[in-house]
Length: 255
Image (tube, rainbow, N blue to C red):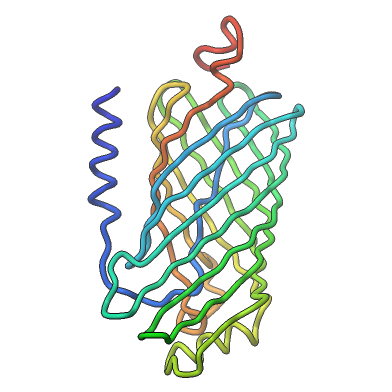
């Protein structure tokens, strides 16, 4: 099992090496699909996330304080893989969500989370020429998760509302980026359907998960209109913390 985790880390290091600088104004973070079964279930994870010409890291935490109820916190930080001259890009998003979950047997769990987050996207186009857009995101996310002894997988759909609340934009940016920013400001709030898939391997309480996240999977907007990143790929390493405080057989294997 140790060799497996070392292999995943080495593969992810190669996978998330990116170059160039494309100016994106939004990128989907990982759609978390927690496997929840009972009160006091808890999980934390750290991972790497990447898209076309950018990469970064994510943190995730989830806890069920009450039966069938849970709280979730996510954070993402990304930047362009390589600066081209003075050009660069960076973004961040932090969100909090509350949800309900419904276990079906000991292997399957359905959940619905609603949440709110805030973030920013800063792009540098030339020396002292930049844009800094701040946004809020509210979302509703139904999800399905399956977890057995050695493997798990799941999927989720996220209905997001992006509200760009403030921007600091230099008029010297030039085209097409200046027109793209004007489109975003004019059309905000933007309603964005997203979807995510994941599969994982490991043994409770430690897991390595691979995620694929798509922005606007229903093709409701012209990608050149807003220049949102169409997809992200991520790998995360998770620990189910409740494994350590449950007693007897409740802390080992599959409940």
